[in-house]
Image (cartoon, helix red, strand yellow):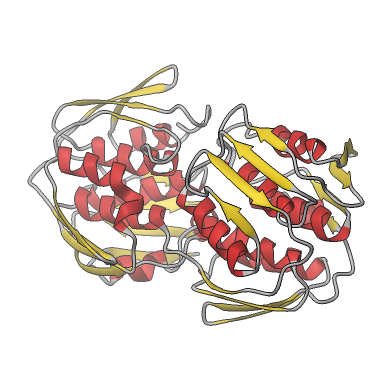
Length: 416
């Protein structure tokens, strides 16, 4: 099993170019199922989850040709409507084929999803929405089975904002008969990016980026030519890496507006932040001030940045309280950070972090995607060497992380 070895204590300096957003690329790849023909999707990151999604589309009968960040996806002749367990078990985003398949083919059989073990993340809201749109939906032998001659427009209220639920039902509604209104919808930039992609295909969507999205169903869509937005979580991760080493990093190819909550907290810590169209620069300080954070749906502080920010707070001056409100099991990185000398106590859904002057290198184990990133960040600042095992989690969400960190001065290599 591969691991990453990091020799800490090196101040990072230089520029990192951000890749396309994983959480935008995956639903956009699924959207190709809605219209027969040749789709061209650019700025697609080279990630394990993207490879898995390509295999899933091929299993459904699509022809997928990736080349240097550009995916040509031909969905002219779909031959199946089943997403099997062996492809779905490692990636929760696989459930996003459900809405497009029912909308275009009238049926879908999709294994219940897997992914990172960070919480329950049930798909009941997806299924309830499809039922509201007239689909027959059952759970059979670990699979969601949905059928509908043609979906009908409906008013759907989400009890809790759900990104994948909003995306799944928005895609389904594009080909439904009549108007669909999604209330208490997710407002994340990835939802807005998917809506823009669908609109480019001929969908009629208003309100994406707000909590009420209206979709007027159309009889057919056309193939897309679309570029995926930059990854806001990768942007935040490299900002945290520069910050914890007291470095100076410039992040290019990003969208600063998507990181407003994170940039606010970094400024509160004492870091100097400058930004402009497509770039952010962070300048380090001797030691960050401890600040409190609370994860919330967008535009609040993203849960996908909680672990990385906690690593930064481990060396901050003072005491910080990090409250996780989105996922109930997203503190698994704490035990590993404590192996590096962090002082963290868990109280329910809050972690109380007393900053220490130095972390110490240690062997640690990644438990999920963002936890992996937090351990890399902590290891960059730690005294001595750290070895992070189970880094296949990183490969699901970060393109060429070692190369990008090496490019700004990190002493990092892959082993095994």
